[in-house]
Image 1 (cartoon, helix red, strand yellow):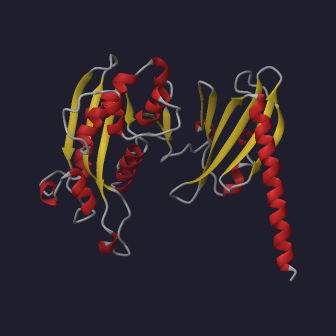
Image 2 (cartoon, helix red, strand yellow; image 1 turned 90 degrees about the horizontal axis):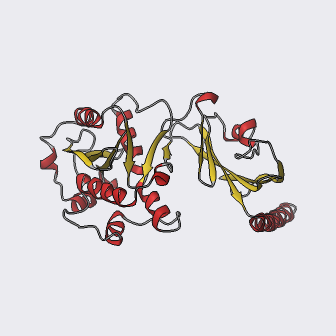
Image 3 (tube, helix red, strand yellow; image 1 turned 120 degrees about the horizontal axis):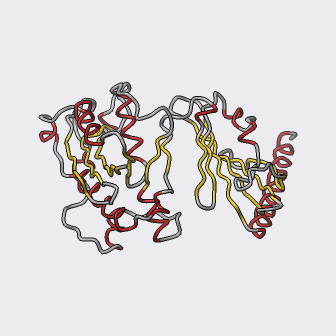
Length: 322
């Protein structure tokens, strides 16, 4: 399987030029890509500017950052034609890789705008090289710029940054430098297209945790009523295990629970509730093994949050009765 490392440059009108019915899309004006073969060697390259169809002028920030002018774009092919060439370049058997998660999302938004066939029927697996670099070189949570990563790895800066091809090229160089069999297993999932049915839902196990992406739900409250979402199953022995702390939500964004497996210890379950661009909802559930000390910490924090919630209710009732 080949890896397609790609990068996009896009444009959006400045607010002062936008009309009420103007699209809010980031319009792609350049695609750059590198194809890596199974031996991690550069096999081929792709680079193309795109003729804008949505916005008639370039945002000043975009123009200054990437040094492209509208007159250079007017004689280029429109997005559907360039995307067709890019798709042919990618071939059949490949995995996308990008620096961060935005490029794959914006690619699909532009495809949807032009009514092009989707990349797949559900979430798309890809390599988030920015995240992988953090896993390989840092704490797995921090994120740095592509240029900073190139400097840390002491890679040669032989072409300028901030153009689609050059950033795809440097992303490929970083991926070549950190690649390993373990990192290849740490795929991310783009959720522009979600599972439609229970059978299509995504459940994948990574080193140290499991991720589950649900199908779409009409209402946010429906998610936690789903049996699979609300379950606490040990992803190692696949047994349902007893909750030590039931699912609760204190911030309106995610629910957390702690459960105990007699054989494999404590697990933390977190369900993040997310809204789609269509106004529907889905959940991303992660299950992670945690030490006993973390369970005690979560328990203490929850007790504090409950006490704070009770205090707020008392104050509200007191103010309402006046």
